[in-house]
Image (cartoon, rainbow over all chains, first blue to last red; front, side, top):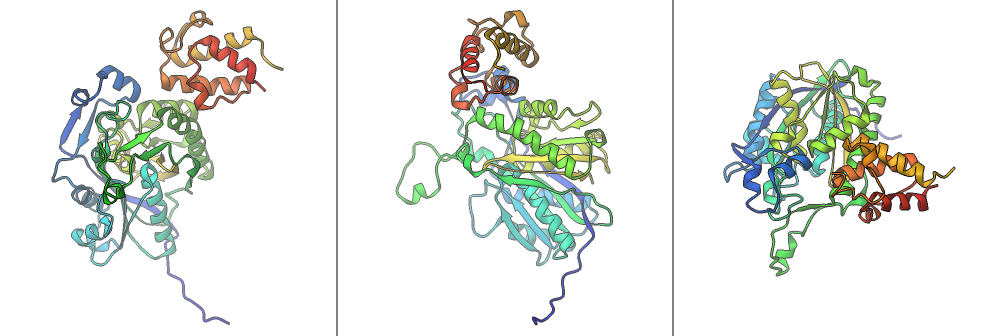
Length: 335
Length: 82
């Protein structure tokens, strides 16, 4: 008979305890995008709902933006950095792959020797990170987990691609997940559809440079707009609905809807397809933030709380979806 | 039972009205979705998905690009409906 292994002592449930965000100081209006593409402010707004986005300057690196957002989330949770014992960073736009961003963040925040790693799940990265964090807290391998979505998508934007040049923004959004005596994060409905991996993709792999290639254009994110729109609106509405059902929540019970801020048209169509009641506050941060991939949900969450459009204790449906294709949806109690 | 051409036109007119706010009577066979009815590429996706449900037909993205006019869509639906 094998020796008996003592399990960790976890918490019965987990909850989001604090949130923080960082938006780069430079605001980029559509007029600036129009220097590079044949389009118009009206066209960009009608197709995406985006009026402005933030683009990071040289000093607003993935690491620096993360430190700002994470510091705010830790303070919002009423914790000291040394209480954080795991750090999960979701990003697709940090160009130095080894070591992870997370280790430097854990160190510079002053967490001590927190476990630290990066994940790659594009625009579903926040939901993936949240799910891992919840598991760690409930299982007992960590008590307080920092989850950050951070992107500098301006570095992966082809300014001459008129279908994507206006879409992307930069920023960081962070939450702290910790123990709870009551359920405050629902089951996650998540998955991947790798048969559609080419529908949103980086145009070239980095090793094209190692192999002597001198491509005309730097690698950028390209997507098949109509295909992605169809999938996002109609397939993701089903996933969002399922996340409500498995959490035992009806649309009437819901206070807030925070979908990934990809495009206002997707958000509007999802709201319509889900038949959300009038009283549900819908995050529309994309208008002034653009699509910030993994950062979009926590950034929108922070802004809704900061502006009083949502309140602590509200019940929110969050759903992320993007390149992979991947998705993750769950219901959370707002911090 | 398969819908008649007349029923398909009427159904499409209702869908286009619901999604793009275009009066139903403006949705005629010779009208271009983009040029005449102001249905942009994203609204077209919504029209297609609504038409798929209503007429029990699958319209893959590659085929959506070939549907320039209301007549194109009516013909496609008539030929492919279940």
